[in-house]
Length: 395
Image (cartoon, rainbow, N blue to C red; front, side):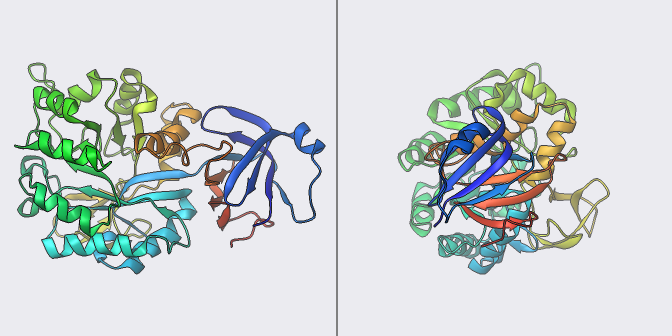
């Protein structure tokens, strides 16, 4: 692969922000981020392609660690072609890597979803599949949200072993309810497997949460949603997340799942490095109606999906680029919003050495954004997978 230089850019590396700089890409990796002056001093080979970005912003590609589907393609389809369809479609929203996410369903379909993701690994023509996020089945029926309680299970380590075997070790993260019996044993088991456990769909007390964190639960699923709320006599799951700086959490920044003021409160109370933007997007995201979790849903005026049958909220229609724009509109500094979309999820999932930054040695996963923070181009491991820039062709 020849050398590619993206020049005349504002570069956010995940560590610092540089004006009038260039990103040098070779063999799918970032080899250098340099100033315009340094670039002018370089002797470039004939094979080097240098693209003038005319002051556009270059940032690490977005990492979505909680997403059920996009563009009519969903994990629930139990089809590797659907997972690959997600991969191809997501790059137009700046996503360069993602964790296809399964929710509780009938056992054969749950395993079918696992097999579909594993069979798609390595065949992507868009965003990279990092591995699976299992949102259950070891979660609480008391905080089911729109999930199906009949498919939720008590902690079952032999079943977990079957999940891991079916996934061939490609489970990145898993949502669990800390209050369930034998959760400590599951947490210790998952830690040995390198699986990130996150609290969610949980009616845990504050003490349950502390016990869970001591056992190895380090992250939390869609903050405030489907979890025991804050109460002055029992801080619950929400209180534990706010009080303990080490536990990180997801946010769905669509203006509906969380009021903007709650996000601002969270940023005030927690280190911003512990906050992760996710979409939790359903299969029809990018469309006005479709099927999700076996039911017909349609996009509401509020920008979320609701069940066609009764108008009950069914889930998110957020995209990562829109989430970043929303955060900035709430008053979150751009650098922090970009961290939440890329650097933080990569670090929390243990991928910080190759994802989430534009530093020498990192994968060349990057997004080019215009002044309105709309996606102009997306590169995955140095290959352009989406572009609105005339001289930067999709390959």
